[in-house]
Amino acid sequence: MRMVDLIEKKRDGKELSKEEIEFIIKGYTCEEIPDYQMSAFAMAVYFQNMTDQERAALTMAMVESGDQIDLSAIEGIKVDKHSTGGVGDTTTLVLAPLVASVGVPVAKMSGRGLGHTGGTIDKLEAIKGFSVEITSQQFTDLVNKNKVAVVGQSGNLTPADKKLYALRDVTATVNSIPLIASSIMSKKIASGADAIVLDVKTGAGAFMKDLSQAEELAKAMVDIGNNLGRNTIAIISDMSQPLGFAIGNALEVKEAIDTLKGEGPKDLLELCLSLGSQMVLLAGKTNTLAEARLLLEDAITTRKGLETLKTFLLAQGGDPSVVDDVTKLPTAQFQIDVPAKESGYLSNIVADKIGVAAMLLGAGRATKESVIDLAVGIELRKKVGDYVEAGEALVSLHSNEANVDEVIRRVYESYTVTPKKVKPPTLIYKEIR
Ligand code: URA
Ligand code: CA
Image 1 (cartoon, rainbow, N blue to C red):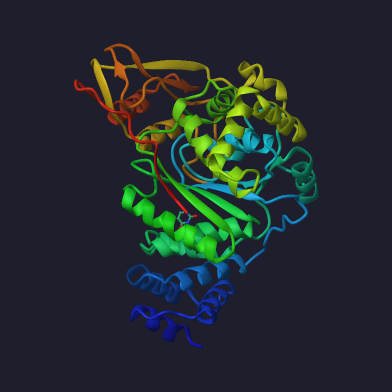
Image 2: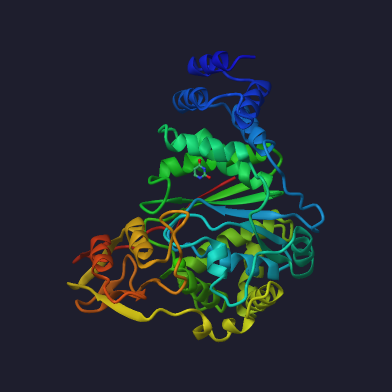
């Protein structure tokens, strides 16, 4: 086989075989195929798309390019959840203990990453003593014992994806449904998931700005998962405005604790119950989605989920008393309200703009080397559809710098107030299975 012939075949819109795709991914991973040929191939895929069989083969070839996590020593069906980005998305912190508390194993491998706030691991490190530096044996034992553990990403997972994603980034080929879908799904499958629940975001703060694109991506991922024997479903949820009220690491931990107490933001709770019921159903704990939801609602009312959070924190060295006393979380030196300039209804809070404002305060990483300030962030006081009086706070900034002029400017840029009543946006658009 010659790479040039395979590029030509894809360029002309023909379907590649599984063997041909394996040849490309193997060759690229071991550097027999150079970046310039892979770039041309990615561009050919960008314009010519891939069939379902090609997408599944590409995903599996990337899975097989590196280590695969073996979770077979963990009892039960391991369901993983993945969100495609977003701003202030606190769902994992709520879902992991909540779903575990009804007996579904949550073996979460997580990262730090770039973005408006840290990743799940950064957020958890706002809890004194908490560590994800556990061995794979400890990880397995903890999930078997407590039904939940979080471990940092280790090993050489999907190196082909890592290389290809970086190449796509500089060759204008990121925005291709078959390439995005196989990239995300290869990482989930290599992490050992038996079943996968996807939360595909749509709106200003999302990767996929419009609903039809989000839907196409969701369908592509669900098809790949199911073609590769992993039961997969997707929910398409709103990310036009941030989820919940908190954007920031310690602030989101507090928000997750509130939610497990049944006192959290309505939208965050609703999304967690929706995603969580899908997880419980895929894990085979119940026969219907409605039963799964009842189980989770009960775990909130009885505080079973909250208790599981304490057990989980303690098992990984964290101080569980923060759950009852959130003042033990890191707090910022200054809390600065940003008042509304006029009265009216909030019609828009541009999620990514607010996200960037939170990052400017130090809540997230702009580059891999950036250091996160776990205490800082933004608390929304109003959300789309709410009425606000002039002078009332739109948001509270939690800052360790006194000068926040630039952040305030960006907050005003992301808020729109209108005299007319506004309906809050739909939270969950669709379910794709
Ligand atoms: N996220 C990924 O992991 N891969 C993509 O290709 C795009 C977003
Ligand atoms: Ca939030």
